[in-house]
Length: 513
Image (cartoon, rainbow, N blue to C red; front, side, top):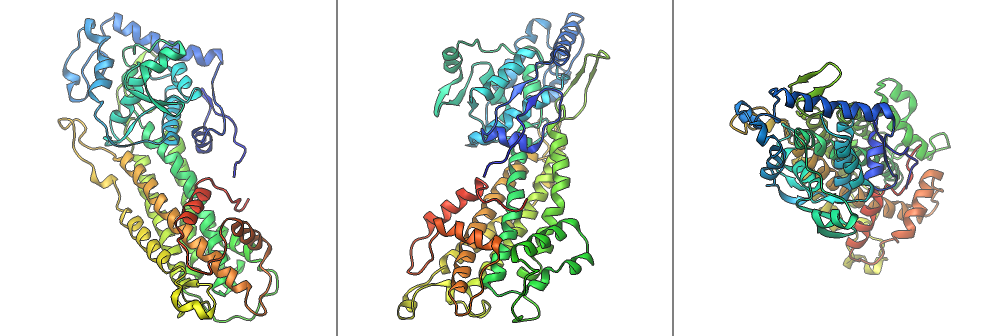
């Protein structure tokens, strides 16, 4: 599923999470603002910094060492060499490499921050950083090595180094040296000016780029979990009155009310309903709006945290060319992203747990109200050797357990680093990576429960006297049937689960306006 998203313009205007994600997914192209005043503002920052160097002013990271070495003066004859030393000694990242989507989001987040014009960088640097996005030249960035204050120093050193023609990039599907790619395009690698390596590295671009990707995935997971719940109300012959509008008016959390409204829409509640089988369903059906509503209500706050960070100047020091001041502070601290991502881990873990419990009801003849054991569609003479969704339910339980284990907040594990200069750090990048892992696991649970719900609905539709499905669920059931045929005789379901995951991560099914 693709949605229209306004193409991002890197300048002084606000950018949304969705614009960053659309750029990361290569669904839109971006441009660097060509407004004369914007470009003049960028130039003034770099020029003001040069005047300070002429006066031999003391500027952190420009005429001093870095971190606890800020008390060490750097003679003017060595100032030009300092940026290269900064990205060089930070070239110690480990772990997996960020994937292409994540890398594009990181580049976009850093470019947005620098385009405020208070980082003391040249327009040429912004143009080259944007050219990396335009030509899809992706620095190979190891995931691990940032504590999330003094920003994402180590991972962002790979951006600075590749702009300077060092280290490796992914280009046209191949790993290439940055120097070769520059030469092939007829570019000269940048010689980073004083403050430029620091401006590139001393910020929150990695955690913020990852947070944008996580937010969009969580938003889709919310809608998908709501649709799965509606399918399971049908499969488990649940009580639709649990979602009555008057009931939710008595406890009016907006997100909770929205989820209940979506389920009412899916179930066509206004249509005549069959006699109820029970007064109250188990909590994983009855309380689904209450569980999913917490995520729905939290997304607004998470958006605020992420978009303010995205649209901020988050390096140090801030170069105020208008008032001719250098402001030393701590805007590289990623506390808001850390909180947002630690919170998101908790929220999506609860979604996984809800869906896992629904799946457990579906496969168990004690609770599934007449469906066959493990949802097997096998005829009676072969039922004893067929096990349907038994192993899928075990897998979903494992994925849920890991997602729940992952809810431990990263931000409380602040470590004092760098000779106790960075003595309180955010751990925001670890939190963001954790959140993406939690989403991956929760999407796996969603895929398993969606296929099981599809099977359960198929079995109900073949019962004597079965009623037609409400239109929204009937349409979803037919779409799913194109890729996922009923499970009659046992078959290995890995391939179908992986296809379902691809569909989820592509936000394939349109879910609620």
